[in-house]
Image (cartoon, rainbow, N blue to C red; front, side, top):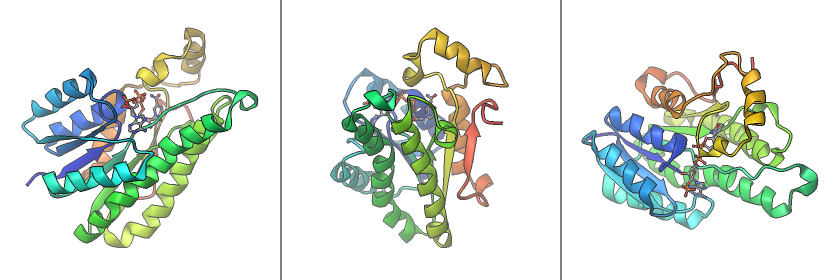
Length: 244
Ligand code: NAP
């Protein structure tokens, strides 16, 4: 029986690549999506090329009932969850003076509460299995902060505290919890930035290039594998040296 990986926000960007990379490794994949569209169908097709099962589960990670329903569907259809990747995330960048309470809350709700919701729903199954891997997508700005991203940075810093606390709570059950802090990765999320902003960011990256979804997915692959079985509570930067 294949291991099962559940990835949130998996129809495009980094999540899509994580799903494809884990499918290549032989995991059955549970893909979370919000709205049925071409991206979903395309990702499913790509995953099925690797002769693994691909189950699409619809839901908004910021809604606890959706997460509960999705996890139950995965258990019913694929029977287990070995790896949970909390990838779904949004930005709503603006300086604090212009930021509305709703802009702050929405980002916290999806990025941080969404990570809590999914983890809470999955963890009882992992505890019963006495094994599991939880991999949370944080960000370099959760470590360094960034002007115009107080909401996003707070959510990503929260994910780091959540990861470390859970790593301590769940270690005795052989459930390993780690976070990845990407720098600038080329996806829709960063496409919206102006060339001027992108050029400025590039100057801060010692490797002098932007990251790709594959760069992040390869670290997820490692953190999900037996090769990382003595690593928990860590934050691994995938940032071309941005935070050295
Ligand atoms: P992206 O291209 O914007 O994709 C985000 C994904 O999250 C989409 O599939 C989106 O689904 C899904 N999503 C958003 N809100 C959701 C919700 N409430 N419920 C379920 N799914 C939801 O972003 P990305 O660049 O791949 O980023 C992936 C993760 O890496 C995020 O957590 C992000 O914060 C983090 N990260 C990215 C970078 C970067 O440079 N790109 C850097 C650091 C950290 P829809 O298609 O339905 O919108």
